[in-house]
Length: 141
Image (spheres, one colour):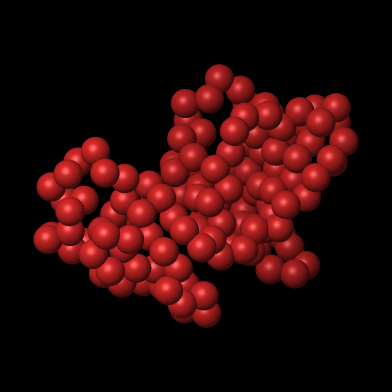
């Protein structure tokens, strides 16, 4: 397998195996005109297996989405073929537009233009509460 090096773009690394496609969908990477490579189940000393996404263009990236899906991931910023920044992601305090409130009585169910927003409730469990109705959302939901 041959995947060229990136001159200007990102390498989203240390994604747990199986999470790359979810990140790809939520970031709408299918709508880009540049090259995007997804490497699934790559061998990793630290993780056993991991996923990697390479994006061959410097675009605005929603780090909140990536950190919600996989808080242990890293985002490497590449410019002129060199690593210029390595961003280590953690569990985000707020999540917007990723989750949808499951409470049928929540205002977001009737007011379609309202963006779904969640606030971190428990960092260890990764649970969030709806900003509007306080319904708890667990990662497995």
